Every structure is written in C-alpha cells, then in structure tokens.
Image (cartoon, rainbow, N blue to C red; front, top):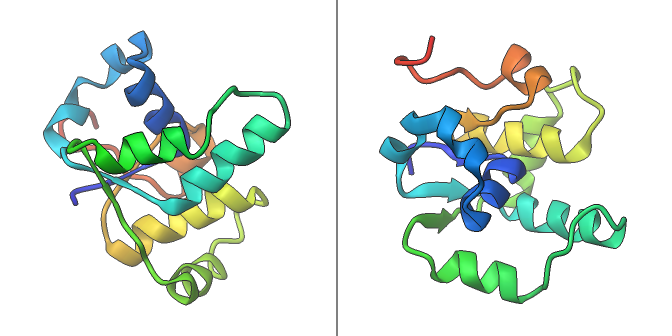
Length: 126
C-alpha cells in the first residue's frame, strides 16, 4: 500500500468521476489503501441524505476490487495518532489523517485543509 485514499477519492474512483483527470499521478499508487473509516463516513453521508450509497454492496465491491487494499489498522493505533491532530474538528478527516500517519504513507486528498496540514503531494505534482 503506497497511500491511503480519502473518502472523496474513493467515491470518485468507484464512480469513475471525471474529477480524477486532475490526478493522473494517482494511477501509480495502486493498489490504493482504503481505511475502514471511509466506509463509516459513507454511511453517515448516506444517512444525512448527501450521498446515495448501498451498503453492504458498496463496501463489498471495494473489498473485491483488486485496485484497493482495505487496511484493517487497529483502532487503538488510529486513536493514538488522531490525538495529535488538533488542527481539524472533523472526526473523519482526523481519523483518515491518523491512518496515513500511522502507516507512514501519503493521504490522497483534494481537501485543502488536509493538504495544508497533513497530506504531502506526490513529488511530481509539487
């Protein structure tokens, strides 16, 4: 696993979004790491009416897709790393950033706050 995807990237890849055209470097990072935190965030977005996702179908599809590696990191490890990330109050951003920090891999994100405080861009994009 060379990186962890944030939830938006996971959605864009699964849905084949044109937004990925801006991130051609992403193909080199396969297989992409997926945090279980993203599955919980997707459920919350669905419950809030912001996204239509069918569980467990979506999660099962990601887990069967060879482009992804679902990284079952220990919860205690996530919590320990997230305690240091006081720059965000979004629990999902905090846990995803903690996941990438714990695994010492970049977090692939387009979120400006995450990019500013946590996620380094790939060398070719800097």
